[in-house]
Length: 269
Image 1: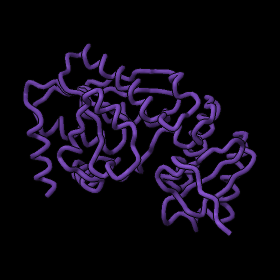
Image 2: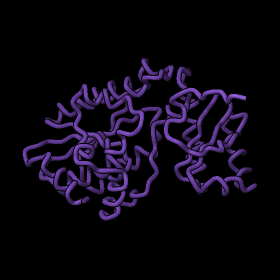
Image 3: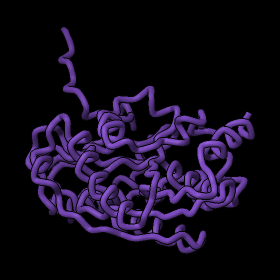
């Protein structure tokens, strides 16, 4: 089944194509690079947008993977766009429109006739307003068109001996902040440092949602009991308070995608 999807993917490109990959360093866009480099004769380029709401370690990983694949890679730095500084509900659409417009400009400079991103088949079941922006800018999503699921992607990356095959999904840091909240660099820095610390402590994929001076920690399945251990609780609480966070809480529902997308409904009593 996966090989059939690889074949569908291969047929989307030819030897004359010059393909630009919007590369985040995540598993989806990483497989996109592996497949383009290994399964097509196209000339492949990659670009990573560096903004204050993208963790530096993700940018560094993207650069390392491109270097290992001998991919022409550029990092473009951009500030937080003024239209999303208040973190509006349509933030993702606005952000994608601005960032991919810049990627389109760069692709034109490199003579690319195709611009791609790592959207996959499983993304269709989630709330992703940014997909509208990609459609408007005529960005191709070859993993989606070929039918690749997240499990397919991880399986193939493992076959490619990629060290990131089991890397947790990692959305931008703005998803850790409630909508209609003025975003500051210090908020984003605190979230990045807090999550990095918790990941290195042995809790990969954990999210830290920031509500003013309160941090709400969401753990992936299977981590809740371990994080409750007194030693871990103490370390995490101490570190997050050193970042200026007054209250540290643990969400008993655990990690769930888009938990800040919609306001919680009050419980009827």
